[in-house]
Image (tube, rainbow, N blue to C red; front, side):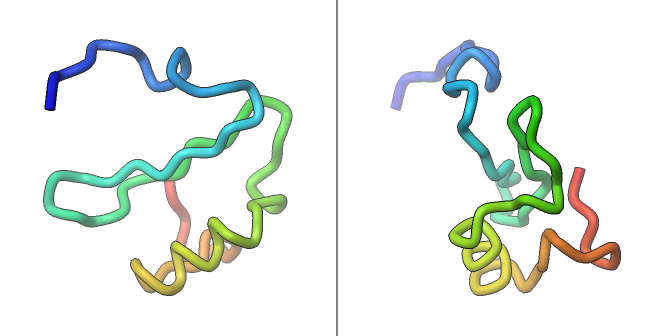
Length: 65
C-alpha cells in the first residue's frame, strides 16, 4: 500500500464522518464534519463504535477527540 500525504479533511467530502484508529487498533477519535454536532452522530457510526470498540460516542463518559 502506497503511503499518502493527503490531509484527512482533503480526503473527505463535506458531509463525511471519519473514525481515527491507531496502529494498535484502538479508536483514537471521531472526525465530525463542519456544521454537524457530536450529538448527531449517525446510527451506523454509533453501532460500529459500540460493537467494535465498546465506546458510545454519544455519552460524556466515552468522549472522543
